[in-house]
Image 1 (spheres, rainbow, N blue to C red):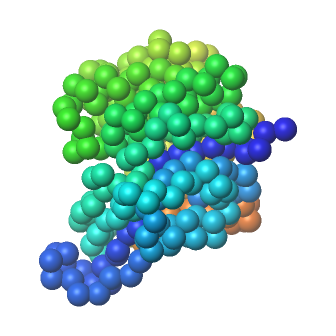
Image 2 (image 1 turned 60 degrees about the vertical axis):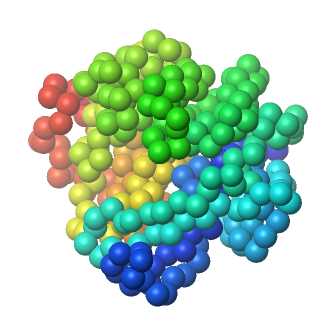
Length: 336
């Protein structure tokens, strides 16, 4: 029996969030939270009832202890989080916005403990997980982290596990755009489910149309490609067909950070439960919309009970609202 339903890996940073709006230089009060796209997805899957293992490194410092305690409180198995006595836990500062605009974020992660992840971090126990979720952030942290990410994905693919991959581009962490594109696509070629945003897909493939972006990754070996279209929804394509699922309207956008992570939680959880791709994308859109209506990177991620209580009603209303609508891809597609 697998020890974990899902294995995820990456860097969880401590995050100091401003308590008042305005430029970070003028903010005097902050509160402490955690941040990290990879661990956001891990937390979201844990809240939905999956057993999730977390692979990472933190410093031998108070921020590292805070990070691990927060992850364990969310139900993540952190036995494979190493404590690095020589390198610190990464952290970030995040501004507060009240108008739905993107917050100002400043990172302090260069040389962090997590950037020293390496192939030595991989153990046989980790390879028994049913599913691996990876992003393009870990390969950007350092050469050793990139090697570990590619090796772990390769071993999991060879072991017959399912893999999902979200590019999560972080251009500032890469030495060049060309290196970023090459390495991200090399990792994506190992995944069964690939989840780029439209802008990411255009940069990574050179194609403009979602169908062509999806075809690029299908040709590389993916089985399902879903292109995130922001508030418009998402386009998906498999070897058997394509479709578009409209976005979920929201009354007010509070915080845009974490929307893509929420989308990944919805898609991965639904596919692991055996739902078809259309249903999986519908759930992904809903959790993404829920994320932007809550302040914080992962505060809007639902529990299993919240999913069961709220999703069916929201799904029914969405279907009625969009049944006669159009899609932003410019073609007639199978609809939800």
